[in-house]
Image 1 (spheres, rainbow, N blue to C red):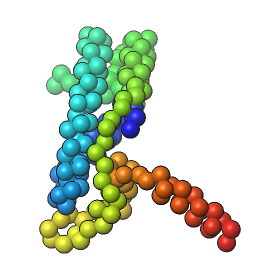
Image 2 (cartoon, rainbow, N blue to C red; image 1 turned 60 degrees about the vertical axis):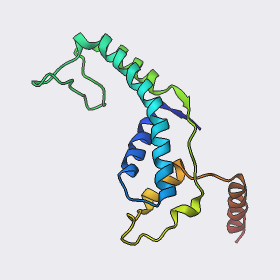
Image 3 (cartoon, rainbow, N blue to C red; image 1 turned 30 degrees about the vertical axis):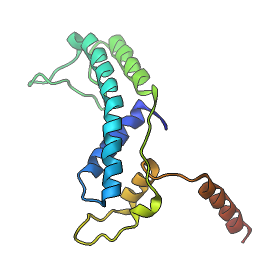
Length: 155
């Protein structure tokens, strides 16, 4: 699966969130395996981001505790507008880099489990998130979906 660094960050957050839930073993295993795989790519991203921030370090605005001030746009604040734009562009370029991620996938039926006291229940949004990241997507399912859509339109 190809994903930009910006998407990688979201995927990492999602996998960490689901990693803290009590889920059936096959789902939990897929999440853990994917989290470990994503961490490798995320580590490279973090190293490159740190290089950018180090280069502009003496120009970054700091708060009273010595932490970087983050602007409303999500970027560290630099008072010099020209330097600020250069740094933002470098960060945007880094976020736009595509990486190939080998996601461990499961069958969709595994998300339909009894959420008795043993497991945490999943909301619809959580199921949709897992469906878009760790659920195996069948080409046949997509074709069937297109055929079904045509049937609905003809009604």
